[in-house]
Image (cartoon, rainbow, N blue to C red; front, side, top):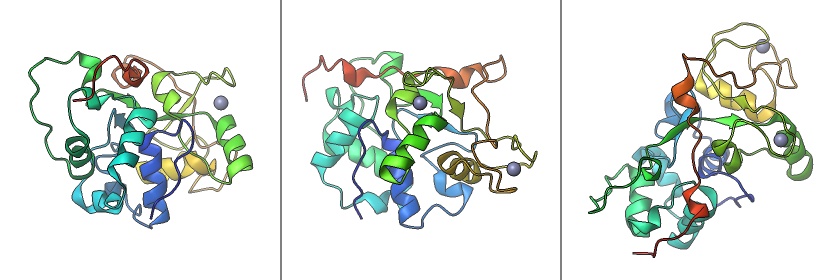
Length: 217
Ligand SMILES: [Zn+2]
Ligand SMILES: [Zn+2]
């Protein structure tokens, strides 16, 4: 199955949508390598073989598009597309490179998964489905609606105070509906709040694909 990728959709979002369509996101463990149990994502997904095989039929050209337009990691400066593909789909270690990359160039840089409910409403209205934008990985504010983003975070639901998990959090985020009490309009979730306890998760990512100053290897 090959879904179309939306403009400015993140690679994480593309993988979530595909796995949902295939019926392969049924348990919190199904997010392994894609989103952590507490809602943290890394610059690039690093899937387990079980989930990675769902993307086997994607061409290298499509992978290159996902990397350059839909991720913040410009890996093609260091690695060829096959190496990056195997890292993303099967967690194969990336070969050592001679230069020492800057911290923000390592695909392990992380941030909390975030979204703007107002953008989701527009997406659902126009395309019938919602997706996480790449821009949201680089900011805590939606530049279109000038509102603080909401976060996907494993905690008790805002509406009915039930202990949630990453699967329910993601399903609630993309639909706006609480999985427990069915309250809608994103009453289930909260806007980003940055305190000492979660500051490490809010290192916003820098999009090094915006500065393609390196040659392909
Ligand atoms: Zn927005
Ligand atoms: Zn609820």
